[in-house]
Length: 156
Length: 87
Ligand SMILES: [Zn+2]
Image 1 (tube, rainbow over the protein chains, first blue to last red):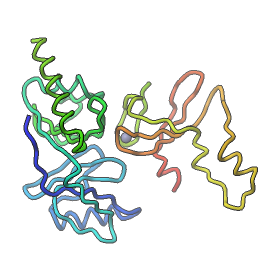
Image 2: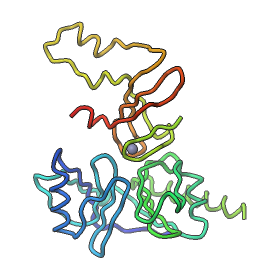
Image 3: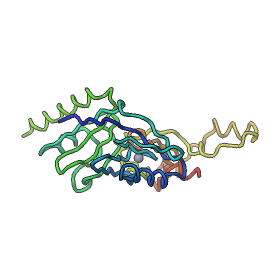
Image 4: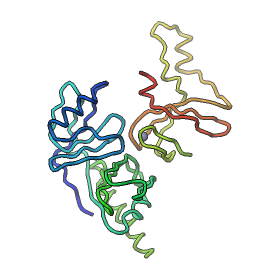
């Protein structure tokens, strides 16, 4: 488990009827448009993570005046990367959706729950996920993942 | 119980908050009169059969969803984003 430091993170919520233009403007600025629901995309400069109904988390500096509401959330989220052979079994103890590679592939992202926390989960590798939670929940997130990992290990 | 969110797919009931009858989407005009407003705010049917209600995908994408379901069989016929119903 390692912390993922997102220096700049904004929530982009396009105004009604402006999603297409907001996406085009983003594409020009950071090389990525708005991703489809349930998808996360990235390049060397930036990341775009679908974050729910009409909203995307964008790890980059963006300017979208007149096209979208942009809220600075840099300090609002804690993000960690969890990886290893048993990672799907560990997450299966805490998350109510199917995260196995057959249904949740690379670049897939979901807003769901981990224990009782609202989280955003993205598959970032064959045995790796990124989990984002509210910053105030960071300690609980690490604790719950460690406890679940210990239980999986104990089963052998 | 599982509900299919139009954004997220089939999800466990625990991710959703139940609001109540989808009549909330049909707000009367401000001059519609006390009876219309009384019905809108307070009076609800209690159907044995088909009903439409609003669920909030609270621990998911944050969308309001209109769920058409049957209170007798518990079958869910359809789910639609409230945002598309209203516009
Ligand atoms: Zn949803």
